[in-house]
Length: 261
Image (cartoon, rainbow, N blue to C red):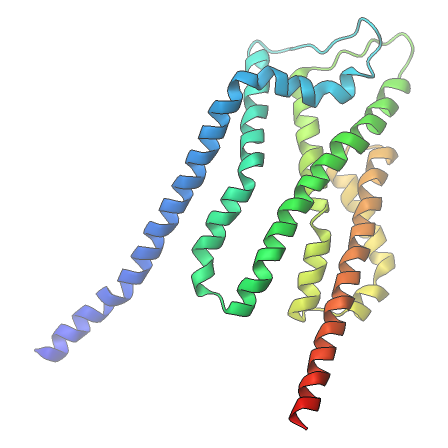
């Protein structure tokens, strides 16, 4: 009887930790959703102001008397609503990543924890930096190019929903592109590749940057270059950090060998 009882209890004992992890995961997801909703509700009163701020790079370049338009009945409501929700998620990213970190941290070693925190913080900072670069550098140059190259008898009247989709795509593209140093650093740190191997592949990396720029941005050379060039520069930054880490590991290995002797 005792053998039978233990065989029945073992599956239950194995399922208990899984259920506890799922409950914790649900709890942390709920916290993240609640934070996003709270921030969204706090920002919704300023939804139109937020949209005006995001539209400012284009509005500042439109000819006098031009304005943005809404071609759909619900667009004046849905466009600011959608943007405010995206901004709420954008602001909540540090808290969301903190919840993810708190969920996986118990299963990590101390050296992994020490490395994961700076990587997470750097990832958030770089994503925000990419979005800021898009707004303050790319948008003025891009919209100046678009508004000044059209025929003189054409009045620019951009639909607010189409504009929002356009800028959100660029925000996301530049935010992800600015994560390249982290990705390069992790590839080198994990041993998946080496600094020398990545250095030899520079011509292919340059080509890949322009291909990605072509896929993620509008079909014009200006916007493609504005994404491809920073991507390549950030790739070089990742190689630099990879060299520093490799040098540090080599120094630690030499110190350990000298200490053992």
